[in-house]
Amino acid sequence: TGWQDWYAEVDRELRVLTDRCEQVFVFGLSMGGALSLRLAAKHGDAISGLVLVNPANKVHGLSAYALPVARHLVRTTKGVADDIALPGSHEVGYTKVPLHAAHSLRKFFRLVDGELPQVTQPVVLLHSPQDHVVPPADSARILSRISSTDVSEILLEQSYHVATLDHDAERIFDESYRFIGRLAPNVGMKGSTSGG
Image 1 (cartoon, rainbow, N blue to C red):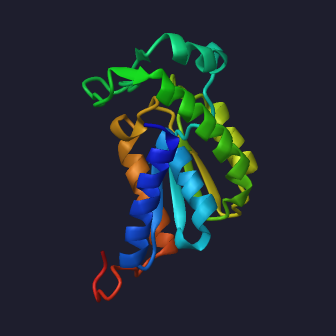
Image 2 (cartoon, helix red, strand yellow):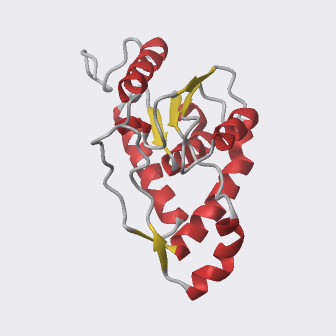
């Protein structure tokens, strides 16, 4: 699969949610952050806000330059999982990554980077200074290029990349809840009289 497949899935699910809900907030971790940013750029007011955790914006290092050729020579590379500081916490992840998919991801990041100025929704961006997968420079670039005026940047000092399973997990959930509560204090399902 490639980025078109991944994006088509989240785009389809957003359309389902906008049919059912008065407001939709989109959350994304790592590559999910890039998918969330593209949704925001493409769907504008259909998205009420974004919560991004260690969002990825670029393939870094030598692999970025080697991918266009290496994908024809090598099928897979070692998977990325478990960049977590909290002892005993583990992430379920792929043991291998197909290089064709990694190359597609590289193209997707470039596409999303060009669309960042179209992102105008409120944003909470939480990132870890000690992320061994996505460097903090990605968060800085995203923050410098989006057009949102309601932006909160929160450092996750105690966590690595998979911060939602790490020391700062509760803080992420609390900040997310506060963000949604501020922007949508009384929102529920369309046609519902109760919250939800």
